[in-house]
Image (cartoon, rainbow, N blue to C red; front, side):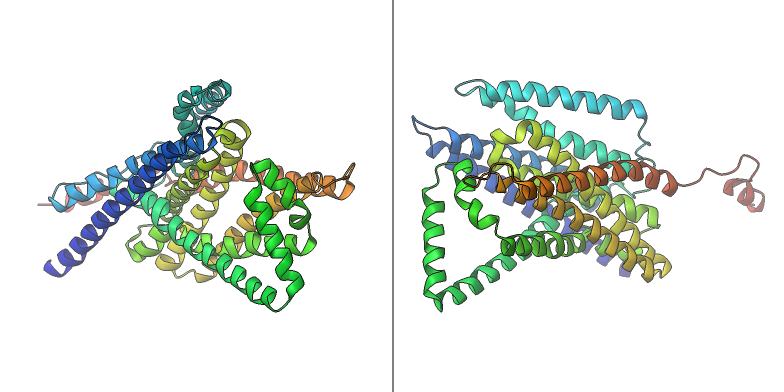
Length: 417
């Protein structure tokens, strides 16, 4: 009994520390963004204020989502029982209601955001709901009716995906970008012509007044085929490998303490939901552009993250509980492929759209073809995943016992004295 108690208590303490560190880190970033926003107020522009306040509110919102894990950890350390989570399967009218409410929120938020002066402050709640509602609804579709352990286990999976997995993926991806930039600097240092080009680009980026000007300035470089190839390698290969490995971190950590592959899928989907939520709020630096089409794009991206991570959780649980390592390898390849194809399609669309910003672009057939190809792949994937996600959920739900089959209590009762 004592041997089991010490490891369990150690896990409880580690989860408690994790939740506290996450709360401090997210709240600290929120405070920093708020201070930077208010110190950047000028009489000519409120762009920096808007972006930073949107980002700060997003960080504070994510901070509150770590509080349930903190509370459950304290309850567990005090010896109080944590109930088993039972989330009912989602119904069609639930989905219809959430979708209608989400569309209404986006429309109302966009109206407030378009008003002059500081009316955009009224759009802040709609901005948060516009990101959070699709994540919550899609997570419900993915895990409704599936076993997921206790409420603390569910909140732990969500929190680890939101903070631990996201931060870990960002650090690795930024490290790769830093290594690539360092290599480019080393190569440029030995080639005076390249060095002059890099310095010219740096000056142009520094002097760009807004995002549109920046894109117009960089378009001749970004539309270079070599840049497209490098972007595809990073976004469609390296980033998906990193993220699909780290997103289901909670499922990796649970290992044989999982009860079934279905529980692995549910917890993996929650990891993906947490990852998608923080990724969406981190995009708050472009807060004024996020309302409308931007929020719709975030919703579709959340669908991809939740589905791919749920599949990874299912594969991990199958390998740890049933020794089905071939399934894990296949699911990992599938998840990375889904993520990579999604990112690659976005890169193709952006690359094609940038070609229209070039001087004298006119009717660029290649640019149009790239945009249509990227959007076509995205729409096809979106429809396919939207159909498959509820099907996967339904197939993984525990089957109800047959009406004429004796229950476990009926079998045991006659044997009891």
